[in-house]
Length: 67
Picture 1 (cartoon, rainbow, N blue to C red):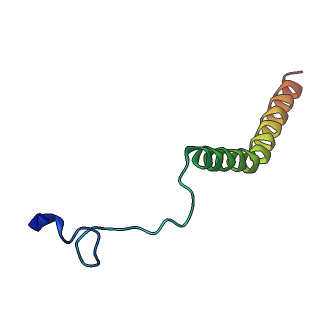
Picture 2 (picture 1 turned 180 degrees about the horizontal axis):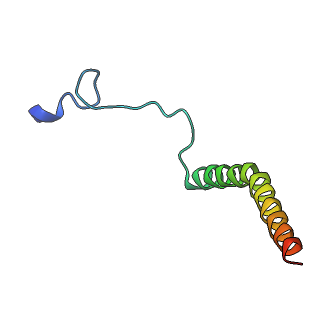
């Protein structure tokens, strides 16, 4: 056995091992991104609607002043 290959895979050999706590598949990543974006739009939709209503009321008020 070669001298540099003896300690490969043994504890303390310098090989870094990471614990895998969840699946790293692309489908799970895509689903997570989709859910994050959907949640963002669900939270922002009421604010956008309120702003559009405010703008439409300002426009209606301006039309009444011109008449």
